[in-house]
Image 1 (cartoon, rainbow, N blue to C red):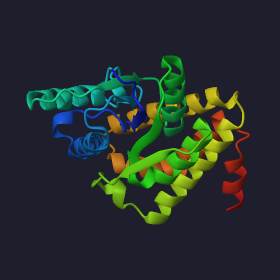
Image 2: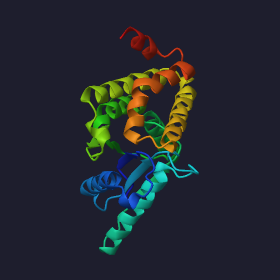
Image 3: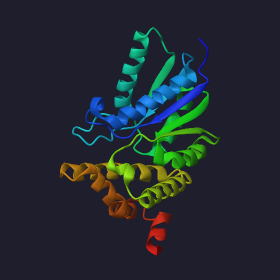
Image 4: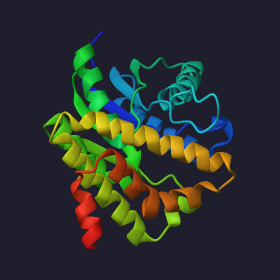
Length: 240
């Protein structure tokens, strides 16, 4: 069999309570699946599903990669039922808690398994530039990024200025983290604390969109001061 010549990375977005009823997530994965199919067809490709244990429902064991893979395998079986067998190799990256870690750990997996080919990253629409910027730093070469505007929840329709600030802040933070290997552990601890805080707020019955807004206006800075007190964004925030 011919070796795969393309690599597709699909970034996860949480662990849904029920994938079968989550229209946003299903739309995202359906479009990504069909895009890979349109590009590769029956040709062999490697697909990396990225995402760790970020779910908000106890016992917090499922990973984003696991639930995406369950859905992906259903699709692949459907195609087989149509009389086609796709030569797609699906790999799970189940450690990452952030966009940065999606890319870093995907690179680790690529190197570990000796995978090769042009890289395409699938992500949510508003995160296109962050994935493009950080991805090319992580991989050290140009990559393709295909953003998918799948989200029709209130999160997608927040103030565009807030969304832009969120993305610029996250991009600057990721670049700063990549400049020093020692910052990686603080980055992971930061995102674990974020996930724990989100779980606490949602357990109290606070709507997710309100939790997101409070995160970007208050809690983000509190945790940054606690876990990364030398972060340059803190000085910028103080003077803004």
